Length: 236
Image 1: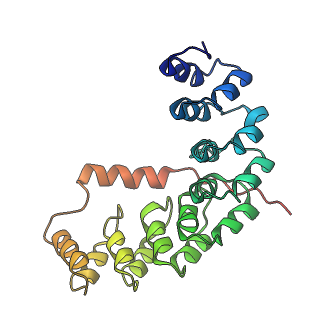
Image 2: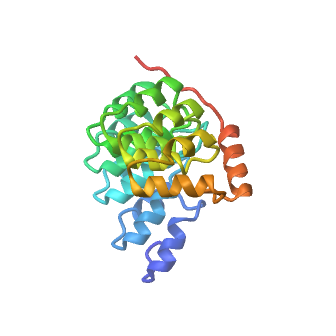
């Protein structure tokens, strides 16, 4: 069935967890992009084919591989696989490694990546510390700072959100208004902001038009506070 003429059939095989490594690897090289991506989603617990997928000419196969353990506190890609993906030419691959890596030295390398989108992706890693958050909040690029405010799991905390509300970039200040659980002081600070969009959103919040519905905001805050806090593995 992995060689069936219908790409829909091949895609179903590619995503079937009962398929062996040889079959998944075969379909990761399929002519149809959708089949290749389907196979890339079926690599959990398949360390034997990681290195081959990390060298795939399809950059989105590599990106999906890098994202394999997103939100996981346990498993991870092999060190050699992570090292290869962390220097990938496609920024999205490096960004997904930044979100998922369990390796402290690799995270530090990506925290200094040349692309601000990769640095900002570090905020989504469950292992991000308060010190890492401070580094992201003071990054030279507003893109990184805005991504930190928008995508951080445990951070920014209330103090950091107030700092973000004073950021020189309107994009960062605007994102501070959309953070679940943001203290009312954020909107108060921004009610007279020089940027029209920021000012309008802040005043709407103060006028009783919150960014989140109450139930949605409460759920988001609980989810963030309940997220696991695994530690990085230290490597020389």
